[in-house]
Amino acid sequence: MKKTKNILLFGWNFIKHPIQNASIIPSSITAAKAMLDNIDFSTIKTVVELGPGNGVFTNEILKKSSKNTTIILIEIEKTYVDLLNKKFSGKVIVEHGSAYCLNTILKKYNIDRPDLIISGLPFSIPGIKKELLNPIKKHTENGTIFRFFTYLPPIMKHIYIDLPVRKVSFVLKNFPPLWIYGIN
Image 1 (cartoon, rainbow, N blue to C red):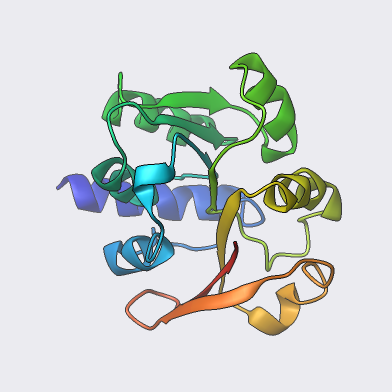
Image 2: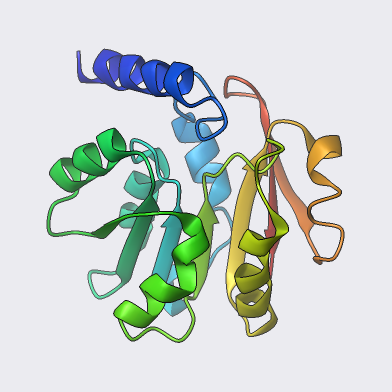
């Protein structure tokens, strides 16, 4: 029943805001595991997740992270913020806001740079601006690991042209199938 509620919430949010919600259903657990593949979590002290939606990636981050890891979720959609606060109460910090406020939110918690940024944002959607990528680029130049996915690699190439991205994985067991890319 809980899974059905999550899918319905996701579908409703997609209908309301298709630019903010790239898919009609949440990412698969297979996609979440692939997103975190080959990351040494013993060195990760701070994780930021951009656009966590209903928390599919967050669940996997929590499984791999130590209890001392600071995990900050930045979500713009209020219904997801409420869900995340309820679902992960006391385990993560949930910030209701835009990913464009990444550095402001990091400053709020006295964090110079996160060790890992996971993005659930729809980067293949035309609404994503390069201004969002500038702080991420700066963090990756200082060692931050960045992982993101796209459903349409050719469309996202112009956005990431200046970044040293590499393909991490292709996940067929997701609807729609997705490509995972990363830096560092």
